[in-house]
Image (cartoon, rainbow, N blue to C red; front, side, top):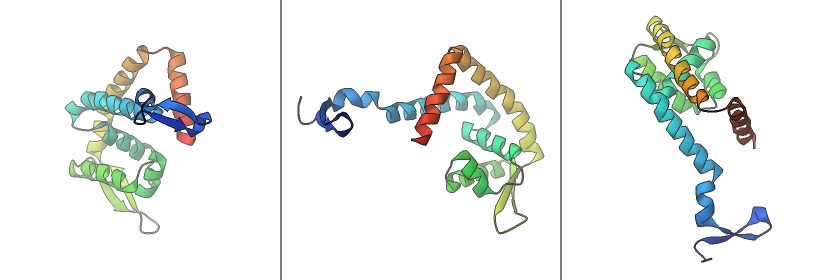
Length: 156
């Protein structure tokens, strides 16, 4: 192996590893690629109604976490506050959500408007259909193992 493709792997007792062969097997790389693929797939399904997958998820978190501050929602979504704020601002511009001051402190609360609630009611069946389409292509055991692996990756 050449110096460019061969490296000692500290996780394998200094064993030589062919980086060129190992790189495509990288868990992180493949997780990111899969996430991007799934995002594009869901975005195409939701696009006719004018929202992205991320905006859909934000709307769901807003619906089921009424009264929580933007910081709390960001924490629940495991998302950077500025990223969440950008997504919320997009919903506000479309009159799908409004920001208000929290009852206590100086935090901001975001709520869906009637228009946002109505749109979310139309989006949920599209999301469920896309989810079911994906699940049909996998065995139930595969789905459960996938969730388990994702959870393990999120806590290491």
